[in-house]
Image 1 (cartoon, rainbow, N blue to C red):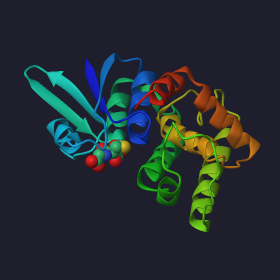
Image 2 (tube, rainbow, N blue to C red):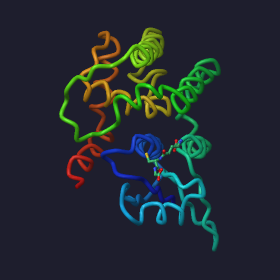
Image 3 (spheres, protein in one colour):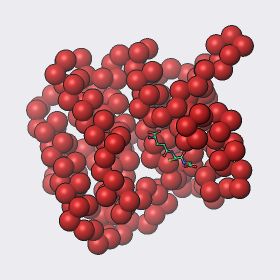
Image 4 (cartoon, protein in one colour):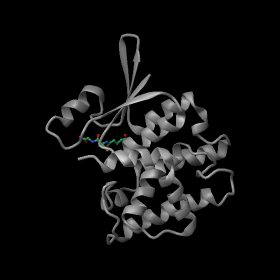
Length: 208
Ligand SMILES: N[C@@H](CCC(=O)N[C@@H](CS)C(=O)NCC(=O)O)C(=O)O
């Protein structure tokens, strides 16, 4: 049985990504929340995660507790057991991995200007050109994937890791009222209407 250590559901986009991957895998798991911005946050995270960051996936193997830190390593670890989480086609799989890697390492301007906060009442903000470039780049990734006419509502068919990585972006599009083309708006709504996301969001909305 896996245990996923996550941060506040309201604030932690990386935790959401790992949690959505686990949910989509169908594998049983428990979760534990370590609240951010508390006096003991850093100390509690250090007891489970060598990087000092969460999410972190724990697996008890005999008397040893195995720890996988970082959302992307967690996603790849789960994908070893549930291979449908990446597209079946080799070229789609490569593109999906490239998008996830780009997301994991980039879009800093958008992340900094539009912090993830599921309790934020939707309201637009002024964004500079770098943020606009991030948004345009994301919209083009989404439009390219959705424009291929593949079966399923995810970027490459059924919901997978790439869609889990896109979900916090969809939430930012909504909470910062970022204007996006219709094809992107449909994908945003698909991600935010999924029962797994709604379950997470319901818990995020009552966090204090
Ligand atoms: N690249 C990491 C980022 C993880 C991360 O930044 N986690 C934040 C919470 S969203 C954290 O642990 N913050 C605690 C701290 O920095 O003390 C991932 O993909 O998991």
